[in-house]
Length: 211
Image (tube, rainbow, N blue to C red):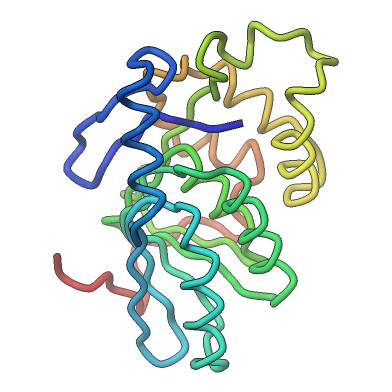
């Protein structure tokens, strides 16, 4: 299922596919034909920004192949996913490679960007990072409108369970906000749902490249 709200680093909401209809479908298809994710390598750190789309997986493989020393992915501003199938496949690669994920104090991640963060073996965060979640939509109905045992839940639910050990966070996200809105998680909620593997820190050695 796709999560269509895209909250950029600027905080601008582009919209929801199901509400905007055919024109937005064409726009999403067009965005999946170009590279919307940017990767910057700094020694053992891979800085990531932009939406995850159908080309992100290939970009990632190329970067990792050329830089096998990478141990940590820092998400700077990752507002969502234009292709959840790619996002989930990419995330399993990250976990299989044993990579860690980190958020700086300036990081802003939402929707599929949050799902991707969960792929890290070690998941760390600095105070001030923003983590936003919401429901997915099939273009007509939000996730919460489907029965709990509906097959439509399975891919995203299983992914969350695989990454965190249970699916509690999945159910939290789909009720936290509708697909055309965003809910910014409180620090205690981030801890409660197991997004982190270590306590929040005030600073670290990581610093996202300047815009």
